[in-house]
Image (cartoon, rainbow, N blue to C red):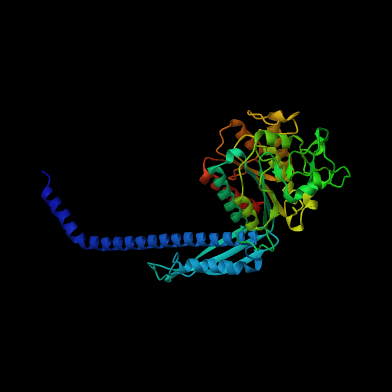
Length: 453
């Protein structure tokens, strides 16, 4: 018979002799766990500090690059701008009690970049194994800026269907867009200029009419207009207003200047306006490129809704406002820059609340000017103009406001430039808030495109 009692006694004795070692092992394990916990806390602390620092540096550099691009500051002011941003975030306590230090700032005027290296010395919660009480955390960011100028032409629908709340919404959204484009720059040396082109039955060319709009005196004049130096021009006394309709002839779908051929004031316009009891042309005149926000907003404030949707005429004049070929009839401050993608970005924003359904050039009589279903020729004229604008390097954004016609959306989609990355070019707005958002998004996208092209 086996001696189980002896075995139990031996095991018990072994356990009794080992009790002190278990206590030592437990103490060692607890120490290791405490070190691991402290190390984990430090790692988390440094990670959070690095993440916060990187965010602050990214924002400082991006903001500074944007301000250089828009002309709010000069390249020489970049260091001051970054220092102020970093200092504000230190004071705000994002990384307190750690102080953000600007280690290096490089403005590369050839590459058009701003580079910033910064650091903070982070006071560790748990210094371990004789480590110093602090660890340095660094961050570096490089952002592009641009000295390209920006020219924007906004085509605004002031037709009869815009009456009531819609015209109020448009006034608010367009005025806000002007502030977004022109705010924060030196008006005497603007980087951004904006033009507006209200349209309905026609476009009111304002002071440009005398040198660019040919008044058809009778039906036989309904053909390509002469250049503005031609002896064929009607006398100023026969000009009933400053309305402009479509061009006719070889220059109809081009941006040739008025020295090549003037824009027609179609003979049928007056009869159509009389028959429909609408204004021949909008009360608001177009405004060539300007950096004067007050001038633009005064015109926007006085927009009046009346007339039909001759959208292709609006497209045509938006193009002219961006074309260097039209500088000869404008004041020096209004003249569009020569097309050079490295030096200037040209953008058109085309807005409507309905289908393009009114045209003169393809009508044989006043009763054919308007068609409730929309003329194929009108939509085709608009999309052809848009295609030729894009071919000339003008980027087009379009906005449909409370559209309920398939043809209207299709025309705007066809006119818009192709989407690039996250930048959309066709927007639909169901109310005033969405209309304002569309304009603001386009303004931000244009700023982004200026930095990346």
